[in-house]
Length: 571
Image (tube, rainbow, N blue to C red; front, side):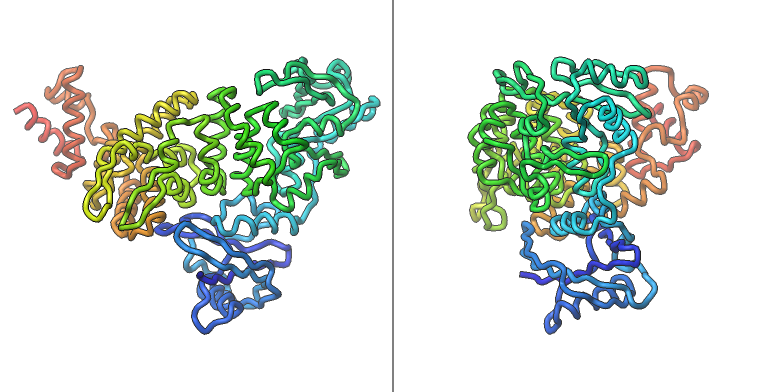
């Protein structure tokens, strides 16, 4: 086990210093706290002070250890000691990182941290928030108007959860004892009110260019399709309304003055990082099967653990997921895959996910031999998510890119295997999955294209880079580089050639190198004027050929040189 010492440096305003890793290694461009490996003969305190001096040219004084924890990456086990600290000397220089900045504790969660630091960030954001959750002025005003009319009203659900976690909610949903008609009467003369869900007790108020969903306290009837209640009944009690919700962390209400109503222990679960259902978890999942995927999504996005009874109920009810539409599955899966703990959740939930993607089932128990070591295919797919950026198409490609291997295995010497053509087979399986989930066509095509080419390692040099850019375009090539890096990190492989390729790619893009027809120094009009082409397919073919010659380095991208080359085509 490797021992790491790091420092939570705090300034006079209570802001914390964080650093962004540079390119070329695992966890590239993710944020972390300054620190590093404890060398032989050092104490953790000495290592922390030395690392701050070497990384940032800062002299620091350490306070007590703030946290001590263990973390296992796919390739190594780490023990961390985090010290509190203050800067006592030096002018900061960012020597080994891409960037460094001072951040308020409540804003830490806006940054994507290395996986090992995520739990600590949650704790810091919880314990060191500079400001208590504050409700937006308009949400508080709407609640005040309902109160003035004689009704109860509270903010509820995700906005309260995110506020307590130190995040800025995107939307504020309200619940009230007022019936829908009474809500409309209360706001109708002041704001525009939309009948967006009267059958479920919801109206939408448009105020200050924002929308606020306001829902009457309600209890729900039977869920015959395991998705939506057959009917709802309006109730007078806030607690009854909270009791129908999915998880304790979403069953918290807040008033304009910060008063919290939490009958099911959601605040404690937020602080402990635990997901549990409100009431009987089997009943909650039987009512609405989408909650199973929401559970996995929250576990991934928040990096929370799932309480045992809740996990077992989700597993037992997993087959009910067939009632959920493809679009809703795709939305939850994409958010799950882009979560900071996606690699852990995916590894644990393969059997549940087979109910929405049966094509993954062969991968769950398939092992491949690599360098003499046995490797589970599904676990490997999960591991690589830890090393890839949270770009949806990249994460989908990482998950599905090896599904074709069980159909393409060929055993060679020493029991190792090769999987000729597995990229194409995997792309075809991914196409089936993503069509069924109704992922939009552009995203689907992107994912399948990344899968198709993921196993081809690039040659270095200008020509290779231009060929890839001509084939896929800059955005796709950059995504492919992310996949190659993640694969290399998960396999603990050296990647000097990949680093060289990435450097050349960056240079080519910065210098606006030619890899597309519209970047040629010649146009179809120039060819027409010179009498070298006529409008139509022949002109397009000539331009494509000229681009090919430029990409291959056989002609300069100048008007004169390209016209001379075009005359060769005519000759």
